[in-house]
Image 1 (cartoon, rainbow, N blue to C red):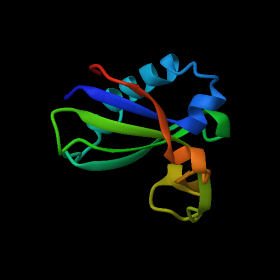
Image 2: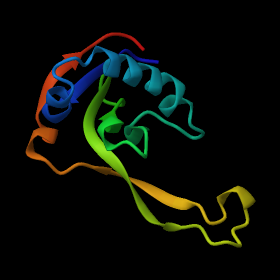
Image 3: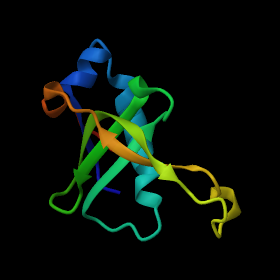
Length: 123
């Protein structure tokens, strides 16, 4: 995997009082353990959610592109999971029956598109 460069939105930076080291380490791990191990993953633009669906303050919306350079650029914004409905009770996969369909959504806030903290390194 290419080196990962993490960009943290000003909104998250401010919420964490500038203490972003732990979040940056989590993003690095998540990129290696989750995003790049998905079936069918290819280099290119990506979108993913990382965090706890029940805790908005610890849920992050990740976007980026790893097809355009020698490193992966990851932009981390505040986000949340939004319920878009439920799987039907007769779904063909029993584990999905009646479960909520959760979709990622980035938080709408002007500071969520400004990036203050940048960290590079390898994942």
